[in-house]
Image 1 (cartoon, rainbow, N blue to C red):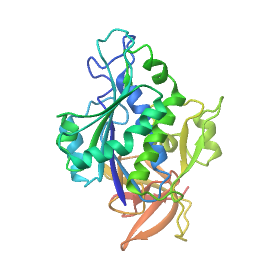
Image 2: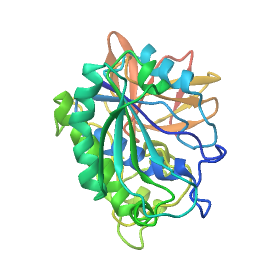
Image 3: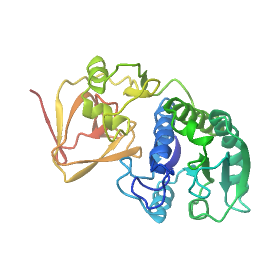
Image 4: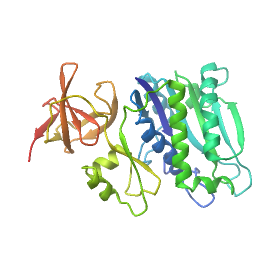
Amino acid sequence: MAKIAIGAGHGMHTSGKRSPEGEREWSFNNKVVSAAINYLNGYANATVIRMDDPTGETDVSLTTRTNAANNANADILISYHHNANTGQWGAWTGTETYYYPGSSTGLALARAIHPSIVGAMGLRDRGIKSANFHMVRESRMPAILIEGGFMDSTIDIVKMRNNSVMDQTGKALANAIAAHLGLQSGGGRNTYTVKAGDTLWGIAQAHNMTVSELKRLNNLSDDTIYPGQVLIVSGTSTNFSKKSTGYVEVLASSLWVYDAPDWDAKYEVVNQGEVFTVKKELEVKGSKMYQLKSGLYITGNSSYIRYFTK
């Protein structure tokens, strides 16, 4: 199982990280990162560690981010950003990728990823560069920091405001990662491409999910979706035969859920009182686990959850 640490740079409210019209850098970064995670979830042997706050509300510290990647023994780290020059509109343009000076593995990762981002963004290739950035210096795995384009560029902002371009850039990033790590396609989650007029409620109903499950599975902080966006709508198929039509309620104050039937595949923390629809019951290394309708997995230990039927 390949472990990929990835994060959208900064947070929604980080001071100064704005376009000249006040658009937040994190919002642009998040569109690419969320799309990349969605596409990576289509691979059978990939686990994603998201280092930033998926809602953007908290600017997670750089140390916390690299600690998360290091503690998870991630295979690679990617920090995604968009650049700025003077803070005023100008004609500068381009995509660039950074690695830590002297890191041959970082350089190899940059060479594997950078051309795909340049191609997807369709901007000037500013090249692969080295820099003493925290994210590439303090990580114990090959690491790169990508600057997709300039927020204060009259050229680049056109691309960055195009949700389809952002989604395709995320897809290009995921595919480049997959090629670099040798990920296996075909074993991941089912996806749905949003069409004009779609709503989260309609998509959730069509795929026998709740809106909450759909949003959680796709790291959505609100109900905004756009045509061409790819959403995960179900989890990895398994051969476990014991089906269930019940529900689980979280009893613990907080509890991990997993994105694979693997106790090491931690995905995110859920909180006391949250309720999820159960799809199947299975046994993992001698312990009970439930596959949820969202495609995630949760422990079946009655000390932490309550199973019930309506």
